Structures are given as C-alpha cells and as structure tokens.
Length: 109
Image (cartoon, rainbow, N blue to C red):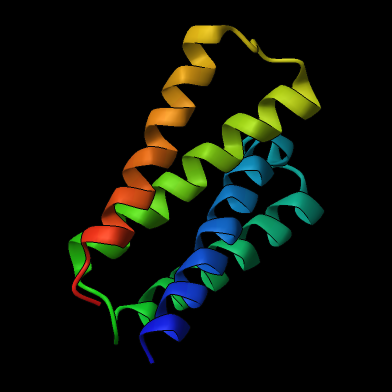
C-alpha cells in the first residue's frame, strides 16, 4: 500500500508539472484547447494527490508533490523555452530533488 501511495504521488507531481506548463499556453485562459487540457491536468493532479494521502502524511505528500512539480517545470523551461542552465539554478534544482529524496527516506510511510 505504501509503495502504491508513493507511485500515485509521483504521477500526481508529474501532472502538476504538466498543468503548470499548460498555463503558459492558455494565454490567461483565453485559448480553449490549452485551457481545457490544463484544467484536466489540474483535476487529475489533485485527484492523485488526494489518493496518495490515504497512505502518506499530508505534509510529506504536499512537499513532494510541489517539489516534483517545481523540478518538472524548471526542466521544461530549460528544454522548451531556453531558460537559464546556470550552475546556481541547477544547484537549486538539485537541492529540491535532495529534499524530495530526504522526505521519502525519513517518511514513516
């Protein structure tokens, strides 16, 4: 059950990165297709996050969920939009990933 909750949380985090990326394409929710896709990704992300909470502590799950989303959006920004790949920026992403791993290791679930 615990592994299933972590896997569910991982996919919730990926969907969170997806909807954050989708916001870039909605142009303030004025474009119908990207707006619908973004809302669907939001709903899926929230649903999977809620499902993961059946086996994980709230604080841990929320921090990991937002961390996965943050790392995913930074990577998408670098790959898709040519955002900075500075050492300092990549170090900060590494720190987020380290925090996610640390929460997983220290979790009772």
